[in-house]
Image (cartoon, rainbow, N blue to C red; front, side, top):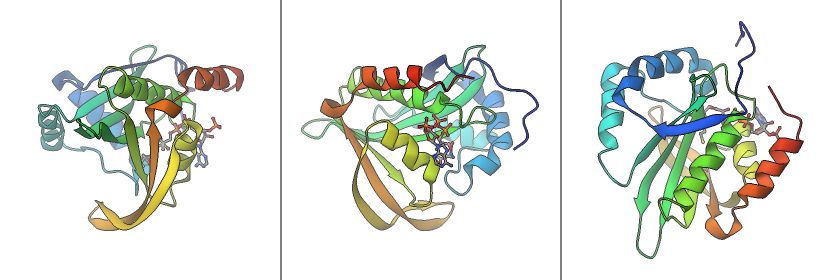
Amino acid sequence: MGRASEPRGVDRVRLSQVAPDDEAEFLAAVRRSRRLHRPWVHPPATSKAFRGYLERTADDRFVALVARVQGGQLAAVVNVSEMVRGGFCSAYLGYYAFEPFAGRGMMTRALAQAISMAFGHYGLHRLEANIQPGNAASRALVQKLGFELEGFSQRYLKVGGRWRDHERWALRKEIWRPKTLLGQILHSGRQP
Ligand SMILES: CC(C)(COP(=O)(O)OP(=O)(O)OC[C@H]1O[C@@H](n2cnc3c(N)ncnc32)[C@H](O)[C@@H]1OP(=O)(O)O)[C@@H](O)C(=O)NCCC(=O)NCCS
């Protein structure tokens, strides 16, 4: 996708829960990111779908986070869903970046914050990310964050109306090393 100008502030990312006021900006971001998202994710793209997304947050097993870069622009979404407590303390992680912020290390930062929140504030022990085998960017992202490949499930999730194979990647609290990761990011030279 062509970029009019290099986005700024991607090295500072702030997460917050999605809110009704985000609707217009969210839908515009989804529209301009369609090429990035397909065929991997199908985010809410209409006002009705966005309201349905907000309604899901009434369930305390679902947390929808938006990431904003310095300057306040909406840059990504991270969803923590199906949080199961008790002896399992596990949830699924879903995520997508918005143009023009993809491929700049912003998502690594946003996901790292969401993971720390899930293990800290929400008391989870395990996070699972289900990834289609051809999704090289998503595989690279979770590998960088320390997720381990646990398995492969055929026709596991329906995405875009079709059952699709997925790899199951997982991260446990005891192997989460946010400080090491932050050091890698700071020394990688990947600055905007
Ligand atoms: C997957 C996605 C969130 C990755 O976001 P991103 O902005 O590229 O993430 P980052 O910039 O933080 O990069 C993370 C790592 O992935 C690598 N990466 C990015 N795109 C890649 C690609 N196409 N192939 C291989 N590696 C890639 C980066 O190089 C980086 O590693 P590095 O820092 O060691 O170089 C983004 O591509 C996206 O929104 N895709 C569509 C939605 C989607 O697939 N969601 C996940 C569904 S499981």
